[in-house]
Image (cartoon, rainbow, N blue to C red; front, side, top):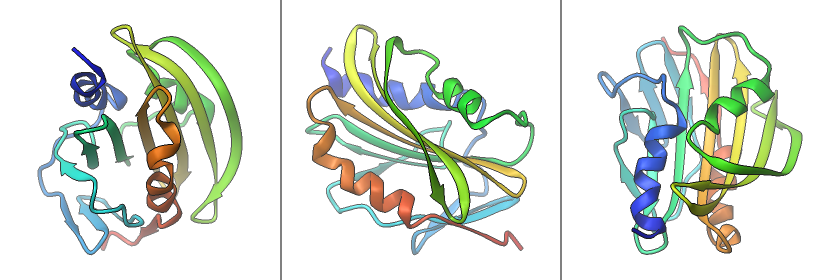
Length: 170
């Protein structure tokens, strides 16, 4: 099985404690679900939106194996530092190698941007995570690329993250 066959199962591993899609709406780049509402930036039409039970939003490019995901957790999460929350996203990966970790600002909040090399079932991948806490929620963004193809879709990930804005859920 190649990288493409591994990426969708990979998305299932990214946020193992997240909820289901009940009551989730995504229109005009705004996701609404019970207790949370947020906007994300646009991704190119190359991406196919897929439903993955452990994510609010997920996209996949079948011919390349690239994947994007966004998730929010507003209840039942630990009030842990951003680096600990990022380590949770690495569950299921082996041979993890940190490439770069830096603090950035997303939607007027400090966020942790973490780039890793890793393997999933022996298949090498590159990972980029952005994790932030805002109000009572934790938001995480993940980008998965086949090794050596990281730069190909990175701008779409950047657009997704830079367009993020948490809104009132009322």
